[in-house]
Amino acid sequence: MASSTTAVSTQPKGSAALKNNEKSDVPKDTAKPRPSRPRRPNFKHIHRFPLPIQVHPLPPLIPHNPLSIISIALSYLTYLISPPHQHIYPAYFDAATSSVHVTDAKAIRALWEMGFFGKGSLSRSEPSWLDREKNRRGLLGDATSEEVTGKRRVERRERKLERARKEKEAIAEQLKAEALLRAAGTAPSTLENPINGSVVQPDQQTQEENVQESIVQTNPPTKEEIANGNAQSERSSNATKTVRFSPVVDQKEYDISQAPLPPHLPEPSLPPSTKHQVNEDEDILQNEEHLQLSNEEAFFLVHALGVLQVYNDSRTAILPTTSLLPLLRQHSYFPPRDASVPAEPDDPFILSYVVYHHFRSLGWVIRSGVKFGVDYLLYNRGPVFSHAEFAICLLPAYSDPYWTATEERRRAVAKKEGRTWWWLHCVNRVQAQVKKSLVLCYVEVPPPVAEGDGEGGGGGGEMNIGTLLKRYKAREMSIKRWVPNRSRD
Image 1 (cartoon, rainbow, N blue to C red):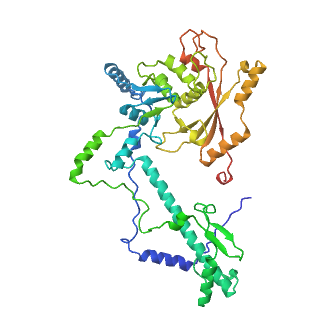
Image 2 (image 1 turned 90 degrees about the horizontal axis):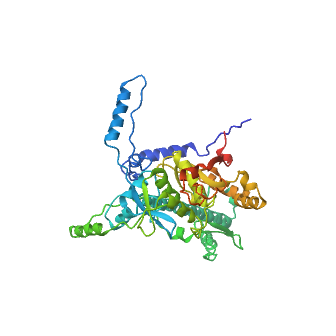
């Protein structure tokens, strides 16, 4: 039987009416202005293309309208006369970091805005180092996403310090009231609301002096005893209660009449003599940031979309897909394996690329999930629109009878598939705390192929990447941690 609870307000009606009257008496001109947030860019227009490819849309076909067939024919004719131009973006493979780097400015913006590929080498996610450097030098006035995030964190810290300061003052008043009552011989239980100030204080001067002595008679806390932002309550030998706060709370000064941070960056006001110098700085300033692609992202852009050309480490020759795939498989180990060692069917790169290609083909924006202890994160539209909805953990599965034919293979498979309940509990708890759904993605590992058959076995035949990828299968299983306060009716 469901039980219903009723919330009872303990606040007197007179105080609520007094608050309402006080609010009505305050003029609107003297009210504190609410800080306005900076305008966000039009992300719907900037990221309107899900992938960095040029397509030619066709008009809809309406069966009962013959004119729709004519419009489709004209669309095909237009495509044959002037087909859309597909841009090919350059990149190079860096053996030191085992990743692919993009240095062209147009290619960086295109790959990020159309599909959220890669991350800035000097930024958290979006390559925005140049804009932040211009803001630091006073050449721009628009705040970047990282600067807005930093301001929010500073404002949150200011609010926490202000809340700690108020708690400290309330506890100090309560301690003073308790000390006065002990000096007067009255029990502390007779207090009704010592924090709000409804305390009967005696008029004797000697009692107040005793209170001051009883409060400050203990020694100041040491650095080891101070907890950052937290109060520690102790009882001394004479039952005097002392409260200790962080020195940041003690030394911080607040001005409530002003906002913690300005809502916008100040516009640079430069004298006429420095305008020429600013123009020279803007011309000299070069973008030192590049876009760093993961191996899975780079191979997807090369093999699946055909919009990327990867050069070798010396940037002298373009690596075809038949040479790029073995190179990336060798660098999926640490240290990288020698080229003479044949590729294994369960090497880390091929398994992670199967998962990446699987979810990218389903329309998800897939990003690295290392900061949450998983392999990948799935975004519905992209990281600038919303948080990731799913967290992916990659698990190899050896269901083929080849992997259980001998005792040696069974031991090797059991070692690779082994996961403890502690691991599952930790990963699932982390995803529940960040409000993401955990998905276990099992990749069926096929048996190794014979050499020379042209399917990636390491023989003399040309590697057929499409046939190689078809041998792998991916299946998902979603796991949800039951949280009582989120699973109520």
